[in-house]
Image 1: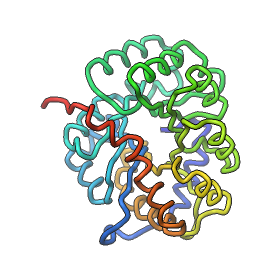
Image 2 (image 1 turned 90 degrees about the vertical axis):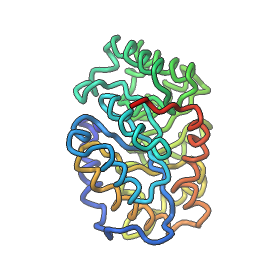
Image 3 (image 1 turned 30 degrees about the vertical axis):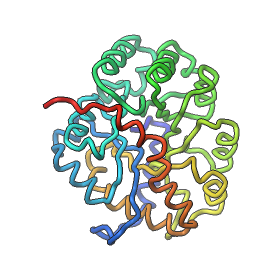
Length: 284
């Protein structure tokens, strides 16, 4: 989900994404989707079994899922523990996107869920600038360190820097690559060895099946630091998962195959796949 400041790039991204074929090609490049949400308005319209079918039909190798509330993530994970990698959002409802960082009750919520379930990350959460130095965000960084989890941070570069100052060994997945320029993203990746970027809801990195020159330079310099994502921030976006996977395969085909494979699925599998063994599906 996106705060108001991100709505314009989100809308532009939707308009720029091409319409693609309905069915995946045979032997399609596997996709590790690092940015999906299954929140209450999605599961009310799309039952877990139907959502899982959409993911499998798209040829996804794995899907990193969070939700508002976390119940959606647990339902989807229970339906497909071989496919879904659960991530814990701080939000109990959509309305907390702009307030969670100032709400101490969020900490108790996170601690309760972490005591009950296993996850690969905390997030996606929205945090900007000096808000990242607040008490709630500091506790989130501590919890991630304690439970050996990634932080999935929808942030500006300033907030990313502040999180790393709190824990230099933190592992951060930068949602949407911060909606920043490829040059700025490269600077951040050079500075932080434990920073990775998802490309969810960006269309500036490719057009007409060709990768933008600036992003190509970033991908070739850091082939092991990028992942793709759909960002199903509204229920309607779930029906776009398949088309997004095909568009992703299209522009990835413009990169050297070893680089394309890393961005498509190998980076995600390397970072999160080994954590799967520690997960415990919820009981029915």
